Length: 266
Picture 1 (tube, helix red, strand yellow):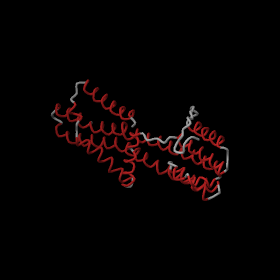
Picture 2 (picture 1 turned 180 degrees about the horizontal axis):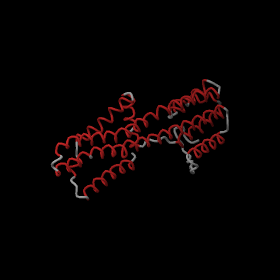
Picture 3 (picture 1 turned 90 degrees about the horizontal axis):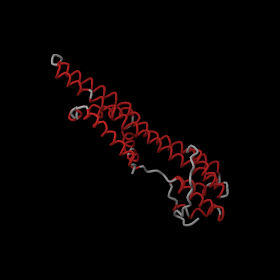
Picture 4 (picture 1 turned 30 degrees about the vertical axis):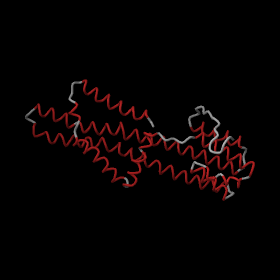
């Protein structure tokens, strides 16, 4: 569970409400169902025009991962690759056929199966590289949906404010009612900007980061599979994969803890 994201959103809402209350304003003035309908209704209808409903629903489902924080374990997958490379080195590549069903990472499992079926590193590289590019594009669509939502919401917030102002123009001769009506009208703008910058755009950014992590792991797996096909030493493969991770993570230090994994002690 990504508690930091959940706490951050709740903290932002509480700070906004607290500052509003501190100024002596009524909390009831922020509760405008019509504004919510205009902002969220208009935003999602515009998104349906831009994206297929299936894409929109898939993006909404993927947003759950932002708060669950499901991230792949790079070290665990690397340990699997090193173990498989050791077995291939000692017993031959076809010996991995008995271990394929135990591989938990789907991309690694597919790559090892291809390695067993086709003894052609370049062909396997081309196939898996194409799959990585396709998967990356599919993953990025989800973040683009939320970026679009973040762009539509403020606009519909302004639409709601304009509607509110049009309605109160009939009270132009009554300053007290007019001032109160203007305040209520601009609640729509608050909703639009708030949903965009507190929810939609941060979710889009987090989905992009998640995609980066997933694609990075697949690149590491691809490098490991090709190295196994080329019969490289398990030690060389390990150093190569760890260096790959360090490079793509901004040269941060990465500690590789030896694990037993699903195969037992290496």
